[in-house]
Image (tube, rainbow, N blue to C red; front, side, top):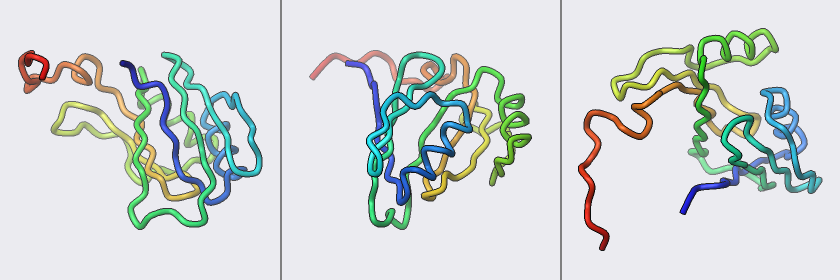
Length: 129
């Protein structure tokens, strides 16, 4: 199996859709007013927005990997995006920056390279149950 798509809650799908288009994602479905779907620039994964009346106290976190995180953050800041965490190296060997979408979902932009799937503490192969 391969993860293809996730759905994020959005209080106002149109506003959130504009946010993600400005980030550079390609909108591939417009199910206004309650649904929108996007394609990631690399890898073919998709994500969607689904209208809700309110988001949970703790929203979702969506992770988008960037080959050049620092340049991506500068580009987005020049477009008016405001980050709540500037790029920094984390103890889990990822470099991350964070912002929120209009519905309060956390968006983590990161670069991990080989450490994304193969950190030094990765478990050895396990037999299937």
